[in-house]
Image 1 (cartoon, rainbow, N blue to C red):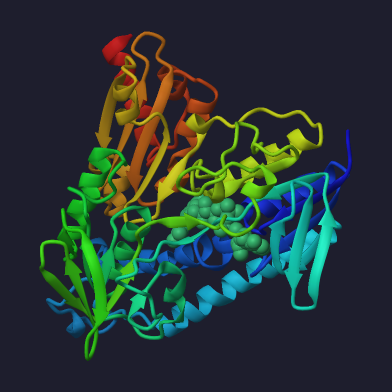
Image 2: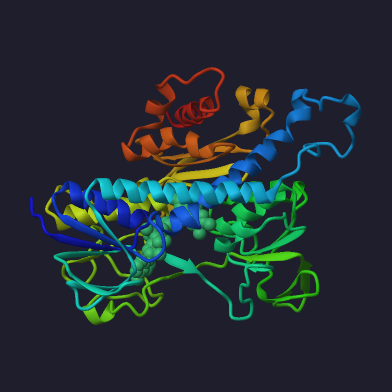
Length: 470
Ligand SMILES: Cc1cc2nc3c(=O)[nH]c(=O)nc-3n(C[C@H](O)[C@H](O)[C@H](O)COP(=O)(O)OP(=O)(O)OC[C@H]3O[C@@H](n4cnc5c(N)ncnc54)[C@H](O)[C@@H]3O)c2cc1C
């Protein structure tokens, strides 16, 4: 195995996992990070949003109390205001917890890297040719020669020039955790994963929420049944979903914000969150000068083992635009280092990636989507079982959700699946195993599930596909 000097620019999941692999393979490793270890994933994106959503989930569950026979201690307090009304969210306390958790996780990652012998440099990194990294730190400039460079630069939120975030009324998702009071009326612009997650969370926390979507429905590009179900749940919970309306800009008013839509309508609220995509952090770093090709969108072009077009320079994570997930970033980084340092490596198979949308209910997917199967004219069969038919779901008071599988009509191999349920992120794993290992619907159907359990529906759907085509 070849050792050498590895420099990783960016300390997010794409970078820090790779640094650990490179150390294990015997390289001298430096991680250059301008903010904090763990990257945006830990400090502003995954960890804070999922911690906030943990509180939102609790509020959603608390709403089930009356259905499950739970009453406030003083029975006289039971009012028509009803579900969950006896609980209020102290957003200052929630956000203090969120920030503390993110900071602690960042410190843990830094500690782990340093214990493993990785050198951490806090500063701005850029390339001076393919094998030199220049770091600007508080103390000055440092040049580091590298046999291998890994670019794990991540992205930043896209900002509309007509809606410049001020962190007080107009926000990007990275700025929300300084809020000390729940917005009275939060307008969320953008109905992709991030917009849907925040709209759902703030609605559950107690804000009035208007979700502005430029498309026909929320979560464009996701499984259509899942997206439709979620939109129905959003509306039933009192969210105002404004579809087919592009937001042109936002301005502050005397006591809030006014968001102008393309058709001239104006939506007024107390705060607005723009969740309108991300821009790769690849500009002004000498990348193209070093021979690293960028796509028209500014993403680093990579092959299946994370090589860029410059010899010795690899890239991982969101800056590559391959699939914006922490798990994929980490896998790309590990693959890059294994390839660069001569260890065994298998190219990334995106088909096997499981993804989850942390709304209530959650939407988890793996394998081919129905849209992809149709687009590539694949032969497939599908079956869906509503969660409401599952005995455990009935006991738990869960109504909204389903399990859906896609399989090959003759071979029976599981091609993909969708789970819409509370904790779908946990339930998807047996389907991920089936997709990764090319198990058949019969393999899935024949495995024991607990009675009663939500996972019983996964085996049941697999059984439905056998009956139809066995
Ligand atoms: C709101 C939100 C929620 C999300 N939730 C999930 C989720 O639940 N699950 C999931 O899998 N994914 C989630 N994602 C996606 C996930 O955050 C990204 O896929 C992940 O952060 C990508 O990791 P990365 O290492 O590529 O980049 P990042 O985590 O962005 O890290 C890149 C790092 O590089 C540093 N950097 C950049 N340029 C330089 C430079 N020139 N010099 C020094 N340092 C530099 C940055 O400071 C940053 O710390 C979410 C994203 C958002 C926006």
